[in-house]
Length: 125
Length: 109
Length: 138
Image (cartoon, rainbow over all chains, first blue to last red):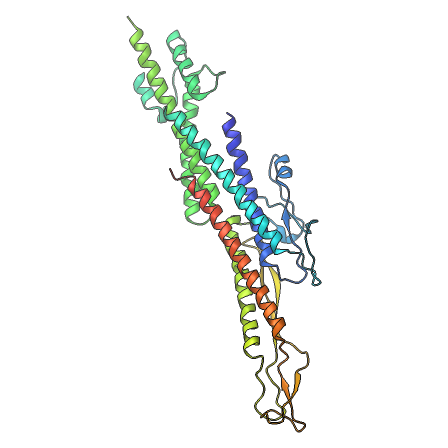
């Protein structure tokens, strides 16, 4: 029943990628906000190490409303720039991350689509 | 007995296999559900049927939430796909059982 | 957080709104770069400023962006010597707006870039949603 593990893994990955994309959106929206530090999510591997997704609240503003975990961390160590106003968002970096997140998501859904189709074909045979 | 099998989605209680006939049907089934340890196919059948029904209900509930903006697109899609997979599995199982019984009934002299 | 992909519309939307307002302010500054007063010694157009702040939206579960304040630039006006001008004072000096065209143009380009970046994010999110829905299509 390895296909089941695959669907579950792809599902978690897609969700992680969505949360990452939303975090990137926050960074881009706040690119000109003084003092705003760029955020990023925990690496997917760390997420997978937990059997249940956990909340990692780094400040009261990161409270989870519906139980879906959102792992965020402030102060990306590899920020390309920090302006004199204290803003550490680099648009180029964020847009690159955004493209790669969309691409990985596309791969994840394509894999699910293929295996789902194969499963359906098997069952109908 | 074939009638009971044909109405699989509602079937809950089938007799435990006691004869060689039922054991052969059970073996025919195991290929469909890929659970080689189970030879008690009544449990398998009712489990699959229950799974199928509950997955479809879950998919319906999640879709309703999705339409109201309370569930994410991903959750709705996953619920529907899961229901699809389980339903088709249940149908395949049912067909295999019907097929097995038909084969067996032809064997009798 | 609400559905992350749905949240992105709200987040990037707030970015579009604030950058839009910023573009408006810059346009106003550019259009009035030479707008003087009409009576002797009168003050000219004073450069406008805008600053942003991040706003945590609990429903969305993310930090949106908003306008902290729209203000005026208190730096001194330029002085040009033009005795024939209606706004010339007794020394023939006219106060001109404290708008630096080059700076405003640079600001305009940056604001555009930020605006476009927010648009890109929205497009990416939309493609991710479409990819998910596409799973149900045959």
